[in-house]
Amino acid sequence: MNLPPQFIERTKPLLGEEWDAFENALTEETPISIRLNSMKYNQPLKNNERVGWCHTGYYLPKRPKFTFDPLFHAGCYYPQEASSMFVEQAFRQCMANKDGLKVLDLCAAPGGKSTLLMSLLSDNSLLVSNEVIRSRANILSENITKWGKANNIVTNNDPSEIGKLTSFFDLILVDAPCSGEGMFRKDETALSEWSEANVQLCKERQQRIVADIWNALKPGGMLIYSTCTYNADENEDNVLWFCENLGASPIELAIVESWNITGALKGNLPVYRFLPHKTKGEGFFLAVIQKNADEEPTGNLKTKNKSKDRKGKKTQLDGIYKDYILNSANYAFFQENDNWKAIPEQFAAEYEMVSSMLRVVSGGVQLGTLKGKDFIPAHSLAMSSEINKETFPSYELDWKTAIAYLRKETIVLDHSAPKGYVLVCYMNVPLGFVKNIGNRANNLYPQEWRIRTSNIPDISEDVILRQ
Ligand code: SAM
Image 1: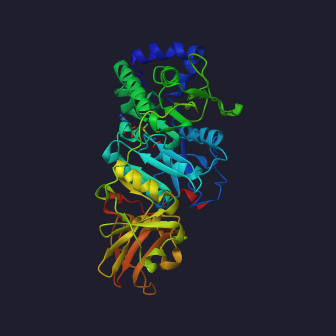
Image 2 (image 1 turned 90 degrees about the horizontal axis):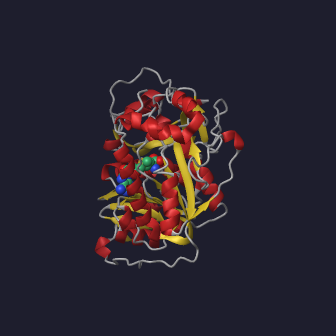
Image 3 (image 1 turned 90 degrees about the vertical axis):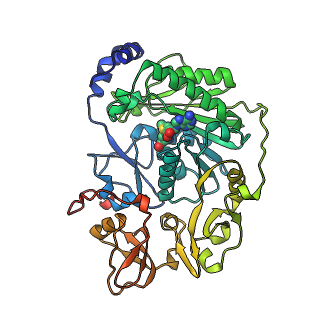
């Protein structure tokens, strides 16, 4: 690997005598890991090494072609770089035993850390996952939908717009856009795009992002700051900047020695670094800071309160369709044109308020679309762990037909299959809906999510969860 000379010049003094081991590790293979979605798949992978700091994280011996594993598309697991899963420790240690939380993942696409937070939060807590770039917000929404939890809202806003939600969140995760030095061995563009000027630009942008969102954090609330870069400018220096300029206090986490996590490479703040020659994962940095409990909120929380700005209106839904979801009494139903969605009742007010102030991409569970007398079930319902499976006949697909379904091809179910809307499954996990009309089944898989490659293997070697 040809490291930029200026990167070497800046990083060597930080690592001291560990430099050679570090440089060597950058030439090694990237460890591959996944995190299971225990709402959909709750058996441990007995033959795989576990990620020490994440109870659902596992290393894989080699990189499979996730595309050809139907359970990947069904949201049973998320391929995630292992070091990033350390967010679990920050959450558990800072938010343990707290319920009814409002959590923001500010820079959330494609959704690795949001899906991790979804697994950690109780149903009484709400996660707002935000992404400023619209196309990436759609990918985020897709991954959140596949994860299948209802207590979420996906937004597409600049941090300064969300910052207007004064003292709204108990916890904010800022997984900041950074110079990406920790991705050098995984991603060649991170290496080719690196420059000293970009490090400076990232550092200033990170300060702006955290300063812009600070007003939305409750007094006494926690902010997890993370990057995937090594330099101190974007890491230790920035944490110090947050403490000095925002009055934040750094929070110490308990660490297990065998994880080989490194502390500060500059100064002595409690920060947590993942270096590839010591920890099995990519380069990662994390720190937790707390807002002073006595800090007076600076902004006013004003909702626009115009119903036309709202994302649909809360209204009654016919009993039959309401029962598509389990525990329907705990949900509020919103109609947006002919589309219906279910939002956990306890967050209906938050949903309305967030919708009045921010651009909501998705939220809760999209139930379906009413077309005349027909209610077409939404893909989001099939992905939801709240789907009431009793209300739809289900039909098990073999691997080949599952891949054809995920390619949005028309599939044929056997004669015994019921007509109408059928939930198609693979290994008993829902993949989506078809409308079975007998000689064929119309495929309701979302067009934009379909597998696009036509280079399909004859057999499946990449179904990870079959053990
Ligand atoms: N947290 C994500 C995950 O675990 O899957 C990865 C987030 S990535 C490191 C940083 C994100 O910040 C990117 O999706 C990027 O589009 C977004 N971003 C870029 N500029 C931003 C800005 N000025 N404010 C907020 N987010 C920004």
